[in-house]
Length: 473
Image (cartoon, rainbow, N blue to C red; front, side, top):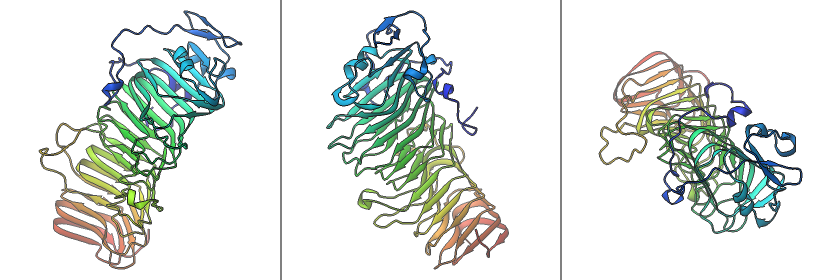
């Protein structure tokens, strides 16, 4: 199964990928690297009805209905610990770190029943097949903390079913998650609370080529004044997927440009973030952005939300943007360089079956001229210039009340192609497609009904075939 198909089953989140694992440290954060001393594997324990534990050398059957929810199956773990029954305070009164430190280990599920759990800084490194799963459970970080979850060199991690409550004063912690092999998932996690400190909510990495890290139903709805939502470290080289996530009103949204492994952003809602809603890279492996909804329609604190791009392909070899719905309808107090932006450091881009609405006078699609030298450039995901820099659009629909500028701009991209494109901007003097400094470009089987010129070329050759200038999208 690949990420173009149906979502993986519940067990697929938990089972090992069977890949050879290379031990690593937390990507980009050497101070959180695992201890170099040998760590004994935590003895497996079987939970009793009284909360006591008995060591066992083999997997013991447990009743999943007593300790787990539909996010996880207890049978996938040798040890299952109900942290509340083990002594963790579920009222939010006392920190639960001593209980977690006692029971965390390989092949272990830490199950959090409904409650509020105070959790101080927690370092977790070097474990295999570790589940940290809640059911209507809230984790409450301390105030005035920088790094909070310091998780690295993990394999087959499941972190699921939590609200991270950051609504207290000066509560703005960083959750750092780095995995070094296997199939890993962060699933059904919500971060609540508006962030004023300049700290990122999540810093993540799939730090080995054999590592698979997936985020599903991650929700960050409350935004920030200064902090960023999610940043992917340049050391991230494995397979990275974001499925059905929600990020709104942050100073920056999903920042995955420096990831050099396969990258997928599937579904989800990204709205009113500064800099970008979704920023992708993918190195030479390529990126897919499919079924994503992007909105810039309510720019809160616009002084802290500069250049509210939609989908930004900043650096990498290739990207395919499919079946997306993008709207930029309000840029009061700020600006945007486009609904889809292909950066100068990016290679080939394909946009398919995507709808863009622009009621503000900004570009729907902005394809910038590619760089010709790496000198003076910072391109963490690429060791060399992209070999291909062509741009193609098929089934693209652009409409709205924008009345000035142009809908599409393509600079310096030879052989750019626009096929079955519809652009409708009846107001003012707005042009359709503008091509500059490019050879061999074409517009075919398209409708461009605009108040300005349908196709504008400057130092470029653009062939038009079956182009209609009257119609609707």
